[in-house]
Length: 423
DNA sequence: TCTGGGGTCCTAATACTT
DNA sequence: TCTGAAGTATTAGGACCC
Image (cartoon, rainbow, N blue to C red):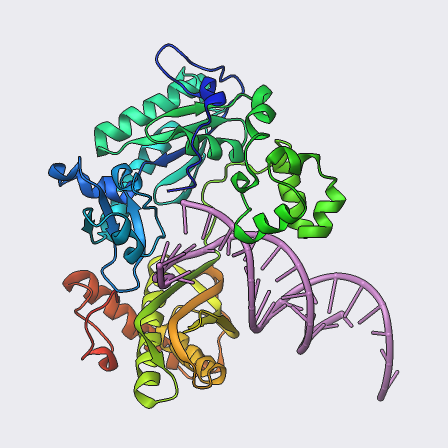
């Protein structure tokens, strides 16, 4: 569901088509991206909707589009667009609620196909991944384009999902190429033609250039990747910062040293939710609603930590107010935790210190500074008294009950009268 | 148009340690 | 004992990605 920059006519020669296979020598990096992934998964069980615009989106008044099939995109609908705006553009579309567990399940199956070909698979999200196939070509007896074609066939045969593939020597270019291959295609950019491919593209095609950076670069008179490549590094460093300046200058000149890395550990785990209606924090009911949500989020984060066998030492909360300004507060504990009770207590304390009566739109909880739960832990004062382990035992028992009887089976008393949101 | 939820990374200020 | 410098950790905010 990445940025979908259409393939300009001048680049038609990069596309794999009937009778045309661009030179793929030296192209060891593949970027594979499922086409309209969530919508495509939903359509597998609803073939009658295949020729209609289909949009996957939450049902809440503040939901955004998660995925739209290509028929819906013709009306200007795209992911992350508010549902209200999508309904104005395409009222006749079929709107489907997301089936989250199903997408991870299909994603696992697709990633397994990739791993049959090479161990160097780096998933970026549920629907896309980088593969380094350079070491596997000899063993497989295939060229990079053969591998791309094989993957597309197998993913479609086993999961009825179409995907697009970018083939190049470096990650950034493979990623751009897969965007241009969409829908349902392969684009190959050989090392000798990287500059020719990149330079006419707009600066927004660079990885790391969003709305703000685009504005900054435009102010310098830079409109294309060629412009960025020709700008002295010192000037870029000065105007957009050292790290970003160096990063963009390298990419614009076709340099991307980042390797494909499998199994990179999580750096943080969190959960957040936007209220359907802003919650006033200057009255007890509003504050109670927010604090109950903090408990629910703490439970979710702790359960995720435990299921992944990890713990976090820094608890952070995020509060977005009605005017969309956002603050974060963080507190580092004496030792890492995966206990909801402890996360919640820390989050509540920070929340009470941070707010002074504003209406609240969103609340979030996140754990950072993750470490393996199997690592020996320094005992905190509370743990030494035997309190945290007792809470942990209770929460682990609840995990087991939920696994057996469903997510609604076990909930904290303070959440009992609440509708069963994604706990 | 009115902006979700899951993340990563960078920068700058400040606090702490040596 | 005090002070300053340098290095490291923590905190907050923001931009960006899908």
